[in-house]
Amino acid sequence: MENGQSLQPKPSKVLVIAMQYLGDVLLATPLIHGLRQAYPDAQLDVLVYQNAAAMLEGNSDISHIITTPNRPSRAELFVLLKQLFRRYDLAVVTQTGDRPFIYALIASSLRVSAVPQKIFKDWWKRYFIQRWVEFDNVDTHTVLQHLKLLDLINVPHSFTLVPPKDNSRQELLTRYPFLAEKTAYVVLHPHPQWTYKQWTVDGWIALGKYINSLGLNVVLSCGPAQQELDYVSHIQQQLPDNVINLAGQVSLAQLATIIAGAKLYIGPDTGITHLAAATGTPVIVLFGPTNPVKWAPWPLGYRENINPFYKVGSQMVNNITLIQGVADCVPCHLEGCDRHRQSRSQCLDSLAPQLIFDAINRILSF
Image 1 (cartoon, rainbow, N blue to C red):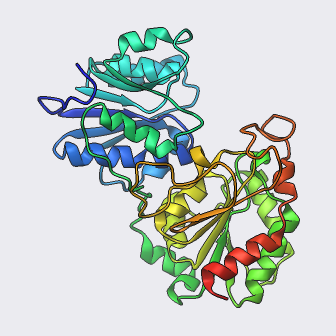
Image 2 (image 1 turned 180 degrees about the horizontal axis):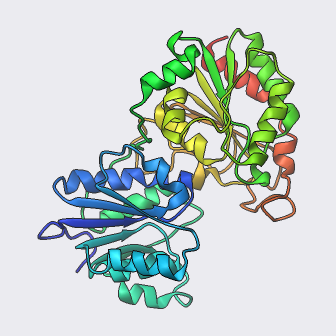
């Protein structure tokens, strides 16, 4: 089949394989939505890692969420392969790894996938894929990279991220009265998954105090890992008593609801920041070594088939204000100055709180 040719007949069972981190899974939702729009009557299943499935909670585009551990046992792998074996008319793979490719090979006779640019390394994947696009990890935003897969089967693009949805709003209002009281608040999410994406603790403390001085409440969030809880607790202890600490207490879908009601969200380059962007709330995101062209949060309402952000410089697009650390090497695309995930990044360590204060003033018109 030639690239760009519509599938006839339309597939009745479609599998999307997106076995990545939380933020990556959310960035695949425009692809999933586009498939749902094109195939409204199809069974549309998504295969993800267990620890990322919460990002798809309540997503009405999806028929079933299939999960697998990051490192499945032989028994778990057998169950998964049996679940997938020739069950689908079409498999769409968002990444280039071996495991997702093999799962697609087993699941369907028609496979659409991203493939590595280096042909000599994984030439065999092109041989077994009916339609493919080369994966660009530098010059194409992740959302647009995924949407290139839709071009291969002549499916129109959808540019809208679909955040997880929670049906327990009344429970949230009962647990957290500040939501019902319509208190003006700003959500701070200080802890990314990896150290090389962290800003400084002192910076977050200064930011919390500044927001409080503007008459706005500070709401702190983070994941359930003890390291994250301790990090956020330390910040809270240095802030006024009216700070609301939700660290580890709410689901992703509930957090999306809370962020949606905020005046502003501020966070590092992490999955929750992508989630915040999808809610439509104004977002300030702090970037250091990471390439904004590829990984900046996707702006709400942005529907162009060109990258929303440039590689260098602080920028604002729709609801996203991206503040980038300043250094000749930024963005280096590396994992911190020591080139491992637990190293620090000088471009973030030297980022002045005043830059964030100024952005807050511009966004909230103080």
